[in-house]
Image: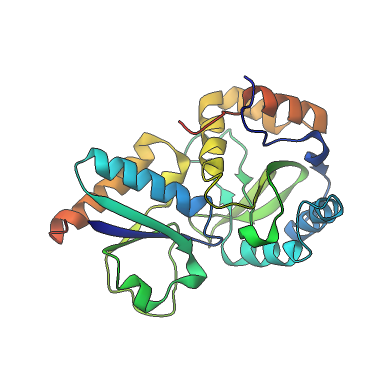
Length: 165
Length: 101
C-alpha cells in the first residue's frame, strides 16, 4: 500500500539499546536536532511532557501477546516537521500508561510523533492504532520484533494506513 | 449545542482523536455536539465553565474543583468499538441526565 502523505523516512528509523526513557529520548533527539527536524528545546520538553502526561499504550486489553508501545510527542512549537519516528527498543524500557498514569509496563517500541501542525495531521495516533488493530496479533508480534531499521521502514511503508478509518 | 472539552498533555494527537471520535459518534446518535481539544496545562476554571462535559484521557488533577460532569474517554484511543462504546454511552447518559441540548 503506497503512502499518500509521507510519514516515514529511512533516515529517522532507529534501533536503540537505551536502558531508560531519558536515554532513548536523548539518543534520538540528538539525531533529530542534527537533522534540523526539532528545535533545541525538544529534548527537555519531550522528557517533561512524558513525565507529566505519559504516552504508554498498554496492549493487554487487545491481546496479552502484543508488545506494549508508546507514542511520545511534544507540543507543536518544538518541532519543525511532520513525520512518524519508529524506535525499536532492544532492551525493554519502563513506561507509564497514558490512560492510567500510575501504572507502568515495559515497552519495546516507540512511535515518536513529530507534529508541527496540530490541525494538519490530527489522525496520526488514530492511524497507529488502526495499523495495530488491522494487522492482527501475529503480524504485529513479528513487526515489533524486527530489529533493523530497513526492515522496520519497509514494513511501515507497505502496511501503514493512508488515513484513519 | 452541547460543548465538550477534551484535553491531553500536548493538545495534539490524543485530544484531537477524542474530539473527532466524540463529535462523529454523538452526531450519529442525534446530538448536536461540539468538542474542543486543548493542552491540560491551559485549562482554567473559567474555561471549563463554558463547557458541558470534560472528556479526560486519564484522571487529571487540575488544581481546582471540576464542576461539570467528567467522562473518562481514554479507551476511545484504542480505536476498538467494544472499548469506545462505554465511553459514548457515558457521554450520552450525561447528556440525558442533565437535559443538555
